[in-house]
Image (cartoon, rainbow, N blue to C red; front, side):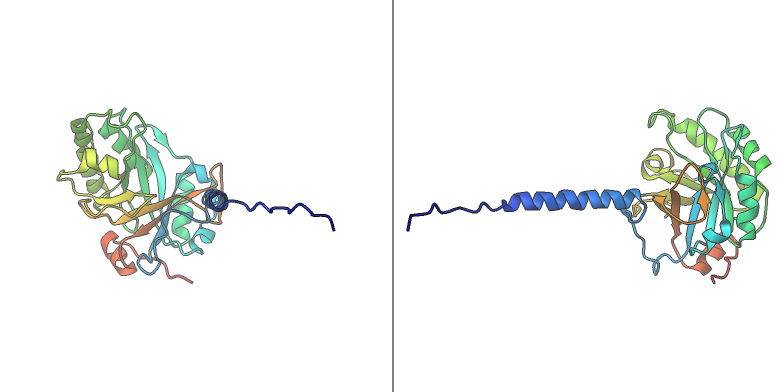
Amino acid sequence: MANQEKKVKRSVPLWLIIVAVLILGAAVNILLIEKGLVWFNMPSRNLYPVRGVDVSHYQGEINWETIRGQEIDFAFLKATEGSGTVDETFAANWEKARAAGLAVGAYHFFSFDSSAETQTENFCKTVPAAADALPPVIDLEYYKSEGSQAVEDVRKALRVMLDALKTKYGKTPIIYTTQSFWERYLRGTDFEYTLWIRSVYASPSSSLEPPWSLWQYNSRGVLDGYKGVETKIDLNVYRGTRAEFEKQFGVKLGVRS
C-alpha cells in the first residue's frame, strides 16, 4: 500500500476566537444600548422605587396614561428657554400629565445670553403656580464651550432666579445639572436648592453638596406612549421612598394599579 501524505488539520488560534467573541459581545451591547434595552446604570427598584421622566417637544404627542402605567410616578416638562422661548407642547403636557395622576413639574433651560430677570419672567408667565405641582427647575447645561461663562456672572444670575422662583412658587427650586457644571459653578455656594444630577455612566458622586435628591440615570430610555422626532426618553429616580418624596416636594403620588 502506497504511503499517503498525512493531512494536518489547522486549528483556529485561541486568541483569534477570544477576539471574535469580544467583538461580537461589544456589537451586541452597542445594539442593545441603541435600542434602549440596556444601559450603563440600572438602579434597583427596591432602592429607588420612585421613578420619573423629563420631556420636551422632542417626544411629540404623549399618552400620559400609558406613561404612568409603566410605573412612572413623576414628570418634569420643558416649559421655557431663555427669555423668549416657550416649549410648544408644554401646555398640553401640563394638563394631560396632571390629569393622568402624575406628580408634575416644569423646567427652564437656562441661557447665558439673556438676563436672569427676563428669563424668570418668561418662566413665570408660562408655568401656573399650582400648590400640588413639583418645584420649578432650572436646567443648567453647557451649550457653548465648556467654562466660557464667568463663574461670578453665572452665580449672580442664578441667585436672582432662585430667589424669584421660590417667592413665586413657594417651594425650594430644583437645579438640574452635571457633575462638571456643579464643580465649576455651584460648589461652595450658599444657594438654597434641591439637586437633580445627570450621571448616565455611573452613580452620582458622594461629594456633591447638597446631596442629590433626583438622578437622571438614562438619557436614552425607551417607553411606550409617545411619538415624536426623538424616540428615546430621559429616565430618573428619586433618592428615597414614596413617603419621603411626598414630604420633600409637598405633593401626593398617585396610587399604582
